[in-house]
Image (cartoon, rainbow, N blue to C red; front, side):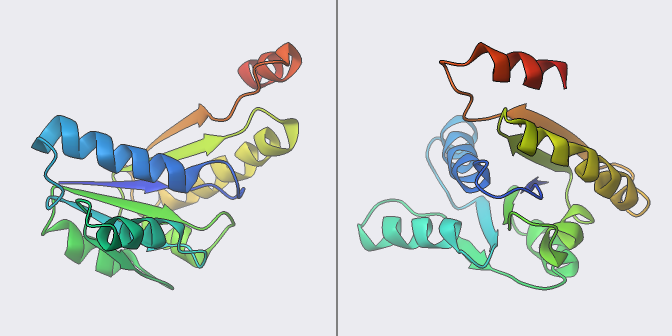
Length: 163
């Protein structure tokens, strides 16, 4: 079992979209399209992940088990992770209680970021947040990746790469 958190202090960087794509890719690659072994947890008040799951279900498409959680979600994630091979958590784009508590129950945290200086500068704050969470979850692995990079601006790509 593996708990994967999509989190970042910045909103609009593609956390929910990445969570959806990750869930679909895992279902295809690991379970031949079966979705029963993957739980989606939407811990964002915008409920993008939950609404996506509901639209699939309403359209008669194969859907993923999906629940919404808020507040301190550490223990609930741990309980759910005992029932599923993968749990994918989508946290709100702010320094939320949901994101911080999910960090305590996650194996991997993925942080998509845009290539803009405003987005990249927040990584410093996120690094501090990650280090604090590692006091309680020392095995948390974190990956940051550039998402939604403009194709017409070399300057932003170079800045992001150097940052």
